[in-house]
Image (cartoon, rainbow, N blue to C red; front, top):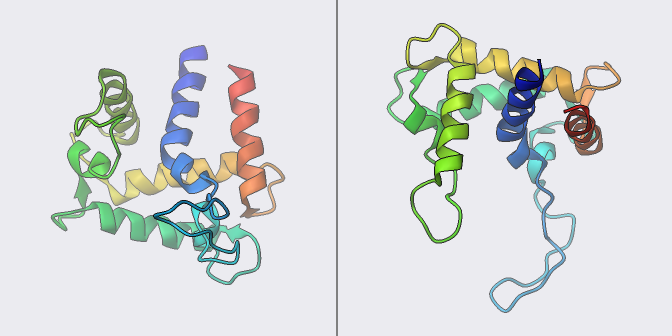
Length: 160
């Protein structure tokens, strides 16, 4: 059970982690002047298409379907492990993932690939997206925001 919870938490972090990353809009560097916080939404809130301050299930579903299409480099309706993680940055200056990253990616891909055929279909991808939304929707109102997802992630990490 502990292994399943750890795997579930890792899966949630891999999918939702980039969406939850807080923008560093107010820090100025010589290369990047400070931007006002009213800049284009980043993280989870970029999926809030109606700008009501939360992402509802329909917005989440549309965004995840679009994400799948973006990841599907060859347009065959299936994701290989290489396609799924092609945009995942390696640690440091390496262009290759560390052994730990590669292991986590493999484990996560196996979790997504429910029928174990070596590819992730849209249905498999969306099943995990639905589980991620449900985990973040702590109050079960059908809407999530950054604070609620962070709370869900923190709650998951303390339950391990």
